[in-house]
Length: 188
Image (cartoon, rainbow, N blue to C red; front, side, top):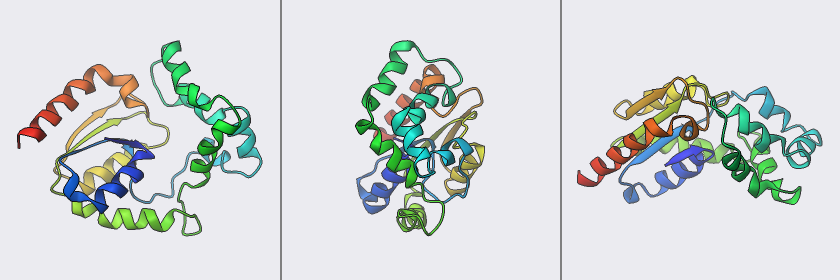
């Protein structure tokens, strides 16, 4: 299963070792280039300002508690989303991943993403389930359409009233789909 940055990370592993895969579940992510970056995320890339927003105020993770969902998270769930990022030092990875979003060849991970994108075709015969939150402020419907174009045989489900954290917004609908998909993948 891949989501958010897990798309590029997980698909990077998948294209290096396609023989290890039985199936793939994709949720609101990308593993291909796009020039699109929401202004809110772009601001976190600005030197000094990004440090203050992300590391000082926990503005990236904290903002996601409301921006990445349609339905309000339970307080204990929200607390657990923030728990790993409880200090300036523990937020450095958030800042670095935002700074490393590959938008052009000048970005450090650009060529890695190009290589992953070029090899996605290796996965065309791997069973895939795409579950998409239609109200994602970051990985919007254009990303969903790109996945469908690249993997037209994938089983797909679009949740118009779910956000980026699609599992938080539509878990009751998604859980049976994932269970059925994995059961089907294991029997084929």
